[in-house]
Length: 117
Image 1 (tube, rainbow, N blue to C red):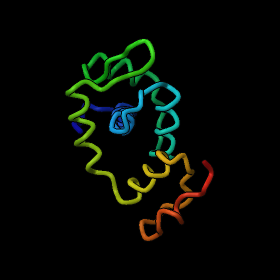
Image 2: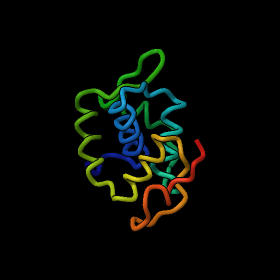
Image 3: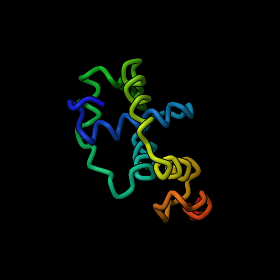
Image 4: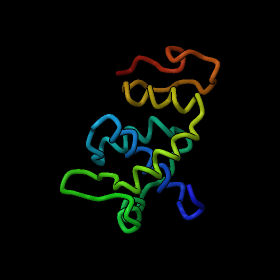
């Protein structure tokens, strides 16, 4: 992503993208849960990020959820290519509602995720 994106905006775009790929609405609750699973200890405060991204034309807001615009989708898709193997496994854990418990890429997915569905 360009230097003009804050870390909060980057995380929010990636999280909305991951929910969108699964055809799940990006509600506040889902964004919070998925974001916590994806970014764990690197999660930053997203306060104001959604309004900023709406203003930049990257997100649209309806009554129930946020939705990526075509530009937002493209930028988020490109930024997810930089995820490491560990981040990909964390994503799997977030999607499966399990809690990541380790950060080594050498561990199997089962070893990384605790079964806390």
